[in-house]
Amino acid sequence: MSWQGKSKGKPLGYRIFVMVLRRGGVIPAYVLLRFVTFYYLIFSRKSTGHIFSYFRLRHGYSVVKSVFKVYQNYNLLGQALVDKTVVIAGIPNKFTFNCDGIENLHQIAALKKGGLLLSAHIGNFEVASHLLGEIDASINVVTFDGEDEGIKEYMESVTGKMAVKHIVIKEDMSHIFAISEALLNNELVCMPADRFMPGSKTVSLNFLGAEAKFPAGPFMLASKFQVPVVFVAVAKESTFHYHFFASKIKEYIYLEKEDGMQHLLHDFVNYMEEKVKRYPEQWYNYYNFWQ
Image (cartoon, rainbow, N blue to C red; front, side, top):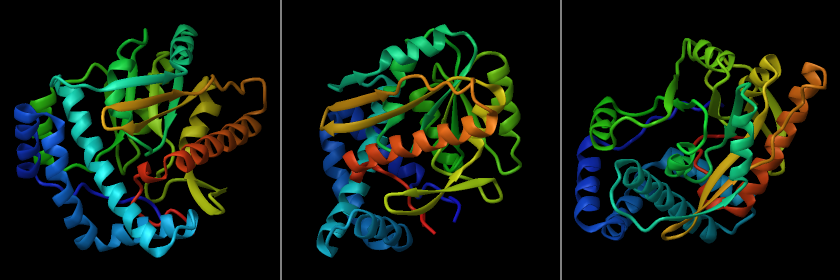
């Protein structure tokens, strides 16, 4: 099943959160978030069912523990949205970062031949956007356009324009041309590789003990343009502390294109599985990921 999600929040809710953030910081916002979390736990039955199955079947948790983990997952997702807003809007904060592999981003930029930064919906990559700003390269971030228009307009008025450029995934696949152009211009493209749109090509691999479909697109791009790849992730480890990860550069240029694609795909799935096992509550995919 492909991802077809939309943000459930409304502009008024975002306005309230931003007001709380500006006046009291993240802690009052986190307290308010607990009530919002209970609402989604009870009334978002479809997404709750999918994420419950993820904890129950893929991690083997008991029913009670799985329910608690669903609550944690919703709450951490809310915190991710709050923290992202705080950082991008320049609101004073106490966030700290532990960086593993930041030098790999500088290295891929120094190659001056473009490249892919492959991420997954694990943790809160956007909260580390300031780290991307330190990289000497033009960076494009590929995003799913699942936001309510009112929310997007309001959030842009709060956060302003980011230093990185955005490429929005479209149903007509026109985003592929924007990504291709960026790679041809030797720019870096950061994109998720754990979701796919209806009708797009997929590849099935074992993930957490069962067959799951992954989008073939990111790996086909790396193979077609023969660009280096780095896997990236950012996970929250305490109230004010995040852990940034960037893998060593993956280069399969010396292999046949199909072999290079398969090597890259397997490496990414293994990397993603390691991060999901380490931070199980911070994987934010609310649909039936497994077949």
